[in-house]
Length: 75
Image 1: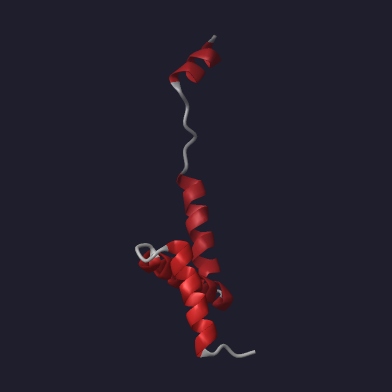
Image 2 (image 1 turned 90 degrees about the vertical axis):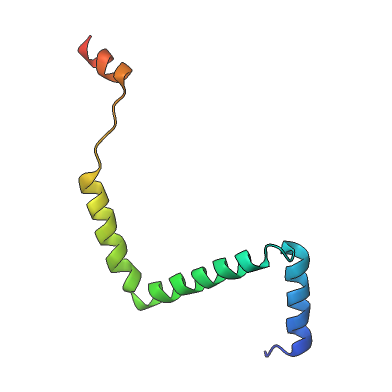
């Protein structure tokens, strides 16, 4: 199934009605980011960087304690 100009114009009109003219650049930017992330994940590039970042974050993460919790442990 191919999209012709009338179909593309109808889809564009619906998008403008739903999101409005002011938010159209934001929607386009988010759509572009989503497509880039999808392509990265399909190539497998995102997997290597995501696992290395999460393992480093787990190593450096220190549990937070509040004063009240520390005083309760002493009692």
